Length: 303
Image (tube, rainbow, N blue to C red):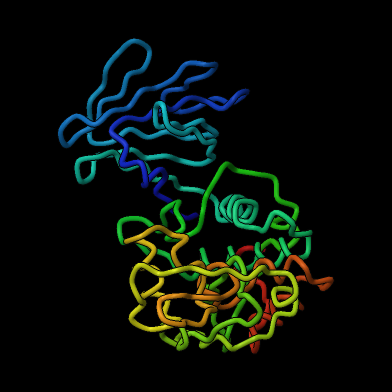
């Protein structure tokens, strides 16, 4: 099981939770069915929840089952597992405890390139599972968030790719690690050092990507501010936070004055989603292509 904080970008003051159609939801051990909903709001350092025309107050409210959770007026998603809602830092913190394979299926379908076939999605599933198992307690109080800071998490889905690769992970020198991936490398993947990352626990290796070189369109941007180091991921993210995330689309670029010309989307390290989607290879071959010197193995206890 893993713990994922949901809706963190919305800093919610209120949530609505109800059973998914055809399901029964447990709310602090009490069953709830049909279209009835529970409203949750922050009340000082506690939470109030409204259920069956009664108001309850406490340190936490806990839900279990398959449910629809929404930030009123903003977003609704479907989740499966156990959801604990508490107050934290002046807002509601909703942490979902979910099965690893449910999380792998959700992440695979959310993160895969739209044009990706089954083998590319299977490679993405193995990467998602490896990432989830190697990165626990990334946020201290819980394992992950549901944003691009960790991995995008959406509704639980049926994922043939996750089912076909159940329990399989990527290892380097006998240890599972959290593989990096990006939308498009632009024609050549980067090493960890090239983008200013540590080479541990996996150094990454430069890999030529004919798919991106052939199909990925070039871009040009006039930069409002020069990056402190060309190709450094921290510099690219800094410009993105200051001026918008499309300011510098990738780390695969050259600079002439304040004009950047390049290809690709994202940091360009490791697994290339666009490249994988265009390859007629089996998923394990795709993984070995973009993650040289690694192995695909069964994680103990997950098969």
